[in-house]
Length: 203
Image 1 (tube, helix red, strand yellow):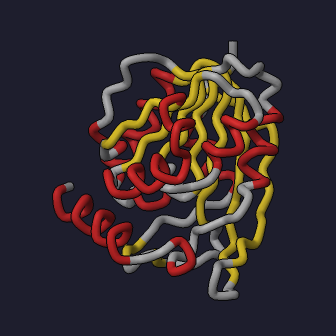
Image 2 (image 1 turned 135 degrees about the vertical axis):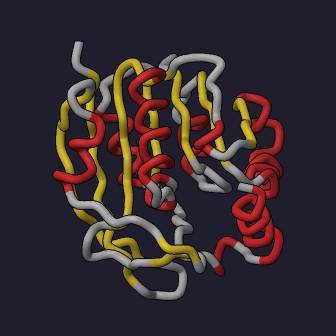
């Protein structure tokens, strides 16, 4: 874990948003999926591996009141906080590797765009899945590289998914609402194929 943390701290210390592949000016698909949950502005939302993503900016501006952003990199969260200025005080910021995260609360919406696919061992994946099953009350939004996506990101090997392999991990506690594939255009004009799935907890 220490090596992984050092890797991500270096990325965020040395590269601008325009120098990393995952940057989005507006994370429209993530916003659409969160809206699809149908939950109100008081929903407890966590963004896993949020880094310095602008998702939190849009959620704050839309009036969401209970937002948590988790990332392994303190530098990434610091950049987001600096960008947000006074608005950063409206957010709970957590520096943690997701596989060692111990939530202090449950969440209504768990959002993850491009963090889960960095977990490549059965143990890491199971730890993540059990976290979700234990602490997500309503809605799961998850995006990973698809089976047509890259095999590596930021110099690290990732695990690619299709609809079946991604959604069955969270069964039977969660049922799929819908999945879609989408090409992400990177700041350097290459494309990465993602799969996004929305799932809801079975009552």
